[in-house]
Length: 135
Length: 135
Length: 135
Length: 135
Image 1 (cartoon, chains in turn red, brown, yellow, purple):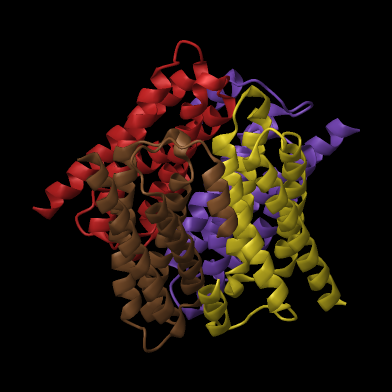
Image 2 (tube, chains in turn purple, red, yellow, blue; image 1 turned 180 degrees about the vertical axis):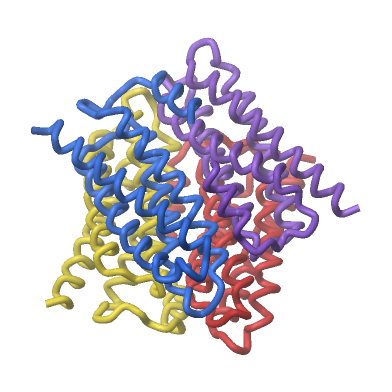
């Protein structure tokens, strides 16, 4: 992610009060969630994992969209960003809970649950940081 | 959209209490928002429209992700769906407001503002319908 | 799609020699393929359809990306567009062949196969039209 | 990317003859291209960079779709994968050439050109590796 950080630092900054370290951690967590969920959805083994596959495919899309929003400071709108963080956090938690149900059957699900839990936590931290800056 | 409706009717339904007509209208509105915002971002003419281009690119991603979520009943989670509808509605409103600022300069922006406003309204209707069903 | 056509006509055109009617049909076919494949992947019923679900998820992404490329005339590069049309056509054909294998078991797969076949045909027509214009 | 590698190794492998090290490098290069192009499109400064912004937005979508295809071994189709690698390579090269035109004006463009060039090279290596395995 060093290139990402270097590029972000070279961009004109349009996000007043944003803690850049918190945002970079959130970007990394979203990128990891997109990748983990894409692989998890593809490797779900039997009929009992169909809900897991569907949730993971959604989470991959939402995490990717979340990541891209943070990389677009020019169109930054704090209300939209906070609502999207809330959505990403909610879905990552639900997806992690589903993956945990077959963590013993599948290494992929176990790893994916960890990555989704981390992404939910990073979104929560960024939400808290944004609310703090607005006070 | 006749094929989409026919396919949706052929799928096993996992969304208890969902008003399918409201959801189909929301799917159509999101598809239109993705397309309008993609074109609007590409045609923004001068430096004064850079924020418009950035917001439209984000809205295209969010509307597309929202549309796909509604087409994945197997992984349906009502809390995640409602949070995502809230995010899509918030961003579509902000994007429409930005597009309206140069509606007189650009036909593309004027049309895009209408499509984003409609998408925000359909998301609001679906949110209201889901809340009603949960009572 | 009337709004899409109206917007496209309002944009500055940067695609010399492009047959706009052919491109609009291709845009519609890609949008339909994204939607059909997203629903098909979610509704695949048993272990025998895992390959179908994975191919449909890829086809949804590729068709969506193809559609967006055609809506971005400002960055138009004919070699990139033709290579992407080739990729979209190849994947849509492979996906349609996979869906056809269980067309009798699943209405969703049967409909999805038709939509993917149509998308492959529209990509082929657009490729032919672009090659003709370059001679 | 350690989590990504660990997950990929835990998945059932359906890609006969694939050099996994080459594919993992290509996945990393595509992820970097998506991020660099998303930021570059957002930061393009003036009217002379509109083509750059449009090409970068397309490249972000194509690189993301390419990355996800490599993470879906279950639906692997060698012809589709090779056609998509060809498309990603062609677009990354065109995008890098465009970014290079204002590398002196913009650090973001200079960094983005490097990342796109690398992505094109990794796609070419993977294509060569796949062709070798098919002989």
